[in-house]
Image 1: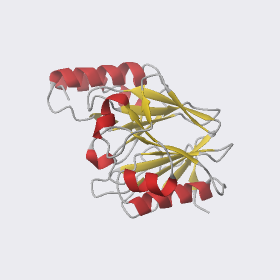
Image 2: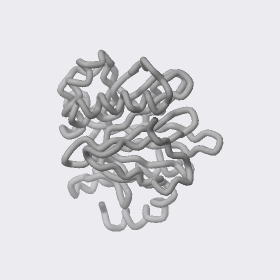
Image 3: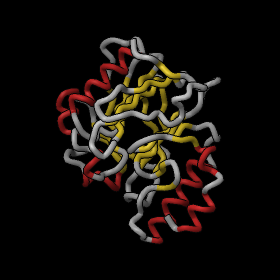
Length: 238
């Protein structure tokens, strides 16, 4: 049985994983979060498994289809579920490094593809569902909120799972929010202002400090750990 982390574990909130290394699993109450690094760019693939039903949602089939499919199976086992249903694969944004394994994973699982509306044309497949701000994705009994974060790409989305009881909430932020700053906006002041405004209003102002932030690459953080840095990010312009 895979080890399942709970709040207070020293591996949280970073959830540091190495390419080819062990995945990490976190008990969020209504959901199990599973994370693995699957590329030389340290792209992260995530699985949300509904604790009640065993239904699963994959976020970013970034690379290495066998590893991604293995993560799905491992997550099901960690959640104590067999024969779980993959309800969809969400791509957080259209950049190539986040969907290299998407075609293979969809072919292997038959799951639908979901992506932010404005990034749909960047995928290697035709998306089955286009996501807009305020949408939700049902994963069994788990309801995952869609938050549009404009700036890194026009259609970038974050996925938010609210906290429950003594478990923190979760924001899977793609390349829009990392420890230490927002995602790359290529020194474009308008794109930076747009992304910082969306992150500030739609994540920091809307969610509590203990919310886990898990980005599209590397280690995670919490909103509380980053909140005091927002004025500094605004001042430096990136």
